[in-house]
Image (cartoon, rainbow over all chains, first blue to last red; front, side, top):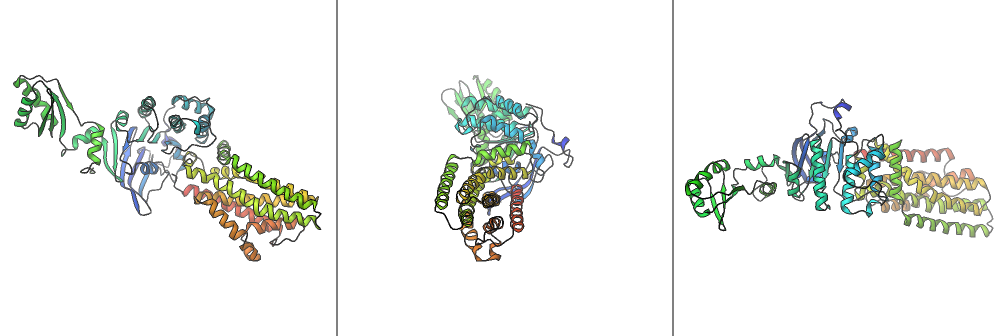
Length: 326
Length: 237
């Protein structure tokens, strides 16, 4: 892939110091129904995962971000430009829409070449060939796209988003319909695009794969931005939710009693003969306490593992019945 | 020009359909057979008979229906199936998308409407002026209807229903209410072109040739202009 597009160097009407993507107080309603409410965030280079349950407003946020929809209130800026008023800035975006529809009677090569022509590529056929090979599709495959498997159509959609080396790549559920190998490959592709300095925004509900993209997340719940940032940091800030830690030891009952009496944990549950699951609101304190306690009890300590420091737990906490706060 | 050509090519594939083409070819063949029957029956005024055939078959049936079918589909189908996003989210001026789409719809609609109308007129009369008049009027009317249909396909997802309703009410009914009401209809301006060139006096032929041509060019231009504006202002799924 070519170097990222520097929109700032091609258009002098925007703020040169502006972030790549900036939404400020964006609200969108459709016929009185609020889809997105007062959402603000700024994005720079790297991969950001947009998470949320169905109906949370993920696709609406992505459409607003690309200028496909107009905010009812608030502003959307890409490199300081309003994408609806400055069509030139659309050249900096590559979009992978969620819908499965494809242009009729068009091969994957024709589809991507069309995108390259419209993006202003000097040699559209060569660009199309490179982008298709990048997603491991055969540029010489003459079959129309509606005869391809869903996974291959998805890859062709990703290939067309990459023509012109967009600085911003927006993908709405891009891993849908892909087999596990393709998912792994495309996860690598998106991570690579982020490492190249592009702003990559991906909506997904497949949390374990999103976790592989990186740790930056935007969590939407009921049209509002419920959390933003590194999900490990978000988890640490959730003081009202005790962390669950698994401890493996040959004397789990004694260890549980000692940790409880010392106040290092707020709950403990023995699981099997050699496992203990404890709950603590202060992971650091537990880390400092557990080894000395085990030594004092002459107990082995084989594993101390956080059980809810993954994205799924954070996501579940945020959008759960008691979640929803920033 | 590369982008315009690419948009035209893409839009041509969007509206290409064997069912649509075969359907209109069958209707066209039927029209030509009717014209042949009229021609062999030795009508008292072959020129007037050919002009009436052009009015009834070319301008009343083929021009509006081919325009509606191809015009409403060329942007309406991409809007409905969500593929418009691939054309819209590119740094291209909107007029290229509108003009490319109109050109693609015309590529299909004009030949399918004009060829049977011209063949039919030629089977009824040997007068070249009348045949040219029928062909020219059908072509211009098809172009005007198509520009309106492209716009209609962009603003409503029931464009075909609304278009047929418009044709039945305004073009086939209101236009018969005299010169003032007729000035609102594409049909009466197209009939005026046939009248002026062929020298016939058909019903609805209220206007002179320059007026009719200018009016249809203006309507086509305004429809394309509104389509361009609409493409810029619309929200894309």
